[in-house]
Image (tube, rainbow, N blue to C red; front, side, top):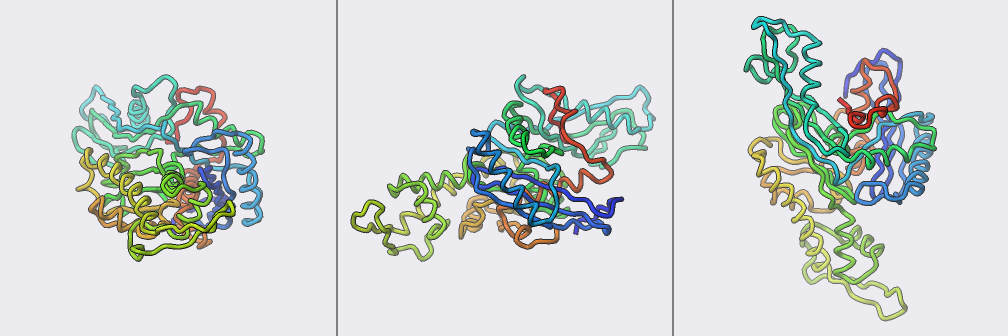
Length: 409
């Protein structure tokens, strides 16, 4: 379990994931012993969201309200604030480095020096319409000595820090926040959904060994690379399960709703048991029943999934990460439910691949065992870590200056 040792008797933390196909609310509680447990869950089919981004404010707000109400009943608490996950193809990431130099060679590094070098790392060129969403601190380097987790008290004239930052279009980030505007619910923080999924799926040893976490959602796929204990790379691809459904709709010449149903009932990421197998499908227009070839259906699915995994593999391969992923690949999100997806991904990545399970969190197994809830559970885990030693609060003060308003670390 995640031992946080909060000073309060209990601390309730809520994660809200406004997905393309489903809105999920997960309620967690940290008890006196510092154990984080999931105590409540609320889900609602999602409307007004396309490729992870808000396209209809009113519909999205109604669905969020319904999911929150369900979560409140499930956990028997009143939800006053949430950690809100965001994604979208407009998000970009990069690694930066901050540098602080002292005039004295035997300068003792202070907390103020650390604060200054971290601030320097957050200064980088980005489009004027973008704001920083996430900044995740990596290792420090003191006078050329790398891999230092905490340099305070050490002697050295040159202090450096590596930083992984995620930034995106400010207005598109704000659209997520506006959904909660009329619900009397504050926002504790905006958090990159991919980071939350990775946080939920991995432990300390896996991050040290190197691991790739891939979250295949309905509208987007996020992936995060950990190596040497820190985030090395992250990205969003605007392709997910809804695109597979669309492929099936076109390839099998049927309505998207029926294609989605067939995907769930007969779909897989392999052809095992599909050769020569067909099933009858009642015609919706009163005409003769039609026959669907399962092999054809699965070939359509595997083509899209293979392409998606190949895009990710090519990206991390170009950056030289394959050799660093000794802990392999973990899959989560709704796409992780597709039978055989782990074997298909393993063949593309040429790395051990498995369906992820939430790490270091107890409570409701329906939440901790569900790969679709990785982001929402990760938001709760993120909030527990953030609230350790901090006073709970919203985002309002940080939104006064839009260009730097969305920093989370």
